[in-house]
Amino acid sequence: MYDAATTALIAALPQPVLLIDMAGIVKSANPTAVDLFGSHIKGAQIRAHLRQPDVAGMLDRVLGGAQGGSANFVSSSASRETVWHVTARHVDDRTVVLSLGDVSDIEAAEAQRRDFVANVSHELRSPLTVLSGFIETLQGPAGDDVVARAEFLAIMADQAERMTGLVADLLSLSRVESAEKIRPRTVTSIDMVLKATLAALRPQIETAQITISYQVAPDIADVPGDYDQLVQVFHNLIENAIKYGYGGGRIDVVAQQMPAMPGFEGAVLRVSIRDYGEGIDPVHIPRLTERFYRVDKARSRDSGGTGLGLAIVKHILSRHRGRLIIRSAQGEGTTFDVVLPCIPSATISDHPEE
Image (cartoon, rainbow, N blue to C red):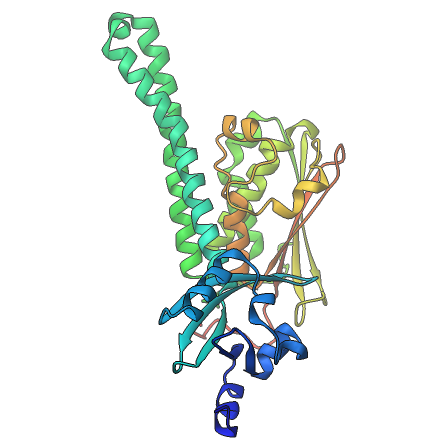
């Protein structure tokens, strides 16, 4: 029954495939299945290798007479956890074919989607609750209280502005993600980008009484980049430095051309945004670019933060084939390094984006 043609057929399949009899004994396994379960899988009882309740129950039903079934099985190694979608189908009344498909990326994306929806719902619930409460109050006895009405309306305006900012960042993140695979090809001056960003943030800088140390040569190398998106990157980073590093009273903006850096081909431009505030505990640094992740949630919300700024920065830099490096220590301030490839010797300005 398990002839050479059958063995050759399942061996050609890229996913793990096994043939089992009605007792659950593995009669044949392709090389990918052998890599997954080990060479001892042939002749073994499949139930001994797929012990998790969902897939074990599915196997019992199929081997008990059901035409087919499927369930997920999770395998672990030292480096990663893999989610397999296990499908069982009868070949005939004596044989079942078992195939496993790696759905780890799909499961991770679905988990990310669930977390994203939950986070957005949570972020919107608080201001909506505040607005609903004040509207109800203004419709009642406080409607004729001029002082209370003015106070409530001011708070309602702040909450509405918070929701508007969240929606704007969500739309921006969506636009950036949709264009992430299209590499910008326009020649862009980082000096112009940084000066435009600082001009837009001048009111906040003056209010916070922060001194800006600007160390960028006018003739510094250009980069292939989307001007508006790069302005957004440095706007988010400098605004963060103003909000969370204000205690230091100073922000350094430094651009330096480097002949090489690991992970890049050719010269790169490194732009550093450093504040002298209280710094960030290193335990938080790996998660700072996650959506809605905040080191200090209350302080972030009070300052109007949506928790999406660094996620937007990460995706924009991914589109530009760049990198964000975060260095910080508590009590020593924080430095955000933006590393971008420089314009190569042959100009690319006449090329379309691709």
